[in-house]
Image (cartoon, rainbow over all chains, first blue to last red; front, side, top):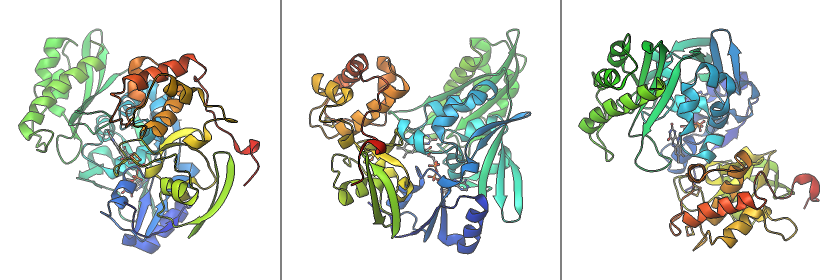
Length: 284
Length: 169
Ligand SMILES: Cc1cc2nc3c(=O)[nH]c(=O)nc-3n(C[C@H](O)[C@H](O)[C@H](O)COP(=O)(O)OP(=O)(O)OC[C@H]3O[C@@H](n4cnc5c(N)ncnc54)[C@H](O)[C@@H]3O)c2cc1C
Ligand code: FES
Ligand code: FES
């Protein structure tokens, strides 16, 4: 199918894009890589009067070092994030999650900011961003504000980004020297995870000193498995200790039931996938 | 209507398009480049894969206006002077197709894969082609074709003509 008619604007600065959003309000839709938006428009689930394409705003692209954080421009394509040496060194969980996101063609067009703004509960980038305590920089006509990951994901396909605002960059606090792994459980190739787990751990002399664990598709938003994180600290990076901590992965979650599995199945799966993710992150 | 200027298979083209026109429809219907096909409605199958500035994209999941100012290579632009690209040759040699519907996309994605990774393992080939579905072959001979291409001049070759080499049409 083809989308309904719309006007098209490709501004070269964030200010122009914000001005167009302010002028057209509800009738306008931001397009990043278009990899989630275009399927929606083609199925005519949405019919904006104006599409504002951020693809020509160079300032929104790229990864840079900023002291204690690595900053990812919202329009940086997945493929570039996956290959970035700064991220590999200081926030390895992010490129690990990108590696198996969608397929090569979609990773060439889809963007880091677009995927997070889309906030699909099965999306692969929310849990790693949450686990590493990302900060979201959001621009509006009155200036920019920064939202913590804990407050960014509001509900299914809903974030803290206002209708007249644009996500410009995401700051990932450095986790240099941490082991990281993203374990994704899928039924078929290049698909969304049924459940996935993002794990980052700092191991000191065989003992887990710090741990961050994020869950994908275990609720309406990505979730932190705080009970697992707490249970891991001070434990040896061994199969038995990690298994015991991972048993708490589904604590306090209300996962969805769908054709891929019901909520109970997901609760069990989360414990298994968490064990695998943490062990791989710890290099055990 | 929006005016777009781009290079397709080495030739400069300039057209008025509706902003909602998908790149694949522009290629097939406005330029007559029917070598690029449409196999699904969900951007899953990869049959429509083309290169945008030398990198693979699904042309059903992109607007023609987004290609303004860029260079597009389709399966029709891969051969040079009547000589098949090594990856095309390898698909023929290894019987990497049956009905052939997925083949234009498979070949375009394989060329991209070999550019990134000139000597991929079998697993890397299967992962690199995961966005391309084939209903006939069971993938076995497609994987063999990519391995064959890697050994016979297909590695690291983007192929096709570039703007500078072809007079504007
Ligand atoms: C076949 C297929 C398989 C896929 N598989 C996976 C998968 O396994 N895992 C996964 O995580 N994803 C998957 N995706 C989605 C992919 O990750 C998309 O790249 C991503 O969800 C959207 O990124 P985009 O840049 O294309 O955003 P777009 O599609 O352009 O935008 C998505 C939404 O976010 C809004 N938006 C975008 N950027 C901004 C911004 N800067 N500020 C404010 N709002 C903004 C848009 O208005 C729109 O509503 C898949 C997609 C397809 C087509
Ligand atoms: S037609 Fe483009 S992915 Fe199927
Ligand atoms: S050869 Fe028929 S779909 Fe691949």
